[in-house]
Amino acid sequence: MTATPHILAGAAIGKVLRRPWLAWPVAFVSHFLLDFTPHLDSHAIYGVEQGGPTAPEAALGILNFTFGALLIVWLVRRQPDRRVVLGGALFGILIDLIREAPLLGVWFRTWPGTAWLSVFHHSFQHSVTPAQWPLGIATQLVVVAIALWVCLPRKHKDPGCSTENT
Ligand SMILES: [Zn+2]
Image 1 (cartoon, rainbow, N blue to C red):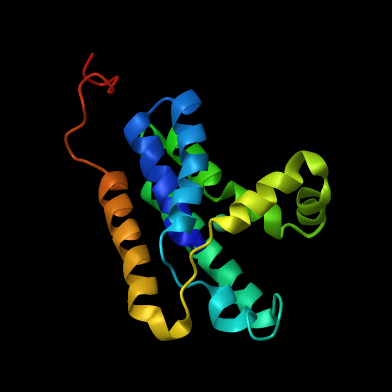
Image 2: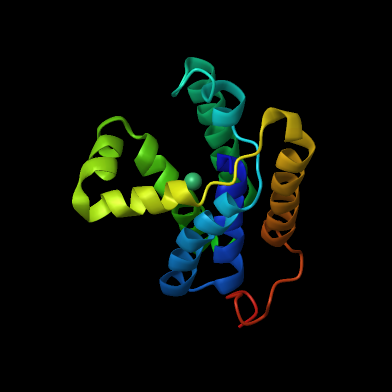
């Protein structure tokens, strides 16, 4: 799946579970489940026929990541639980970040201690073809919509979480 749904889903998990020791590992695992969901990504649009990462593929990926990261930072900027939420967002996208990092990515794919995880991650991909874009886009829009709803600031906070009400 593309970066924005991964980031927002991880953030929503942080928002719901609240405890970093629980939320962050679950956010990390959510990445695989989302990659298992049928989706259209920049590799399927720009990379497959050319046989590897192309400039437009990389540009779209970076744009997507930047958009998702800025959106969640802006959304939770005044929320008291932003630490666990932003941590969840990071863990939600972490494996793609490591994979795409110039030197770290090579190490991640080749070192025996992590190569299995790289293979496992790749085996979960359910990319659809550009011709199947309605399905490939719809699944991601649903994830984004649910995650945004979970992460939106609420006017009435849980009294247990607010220091103002004590
Ligand atoms: Zn992935």
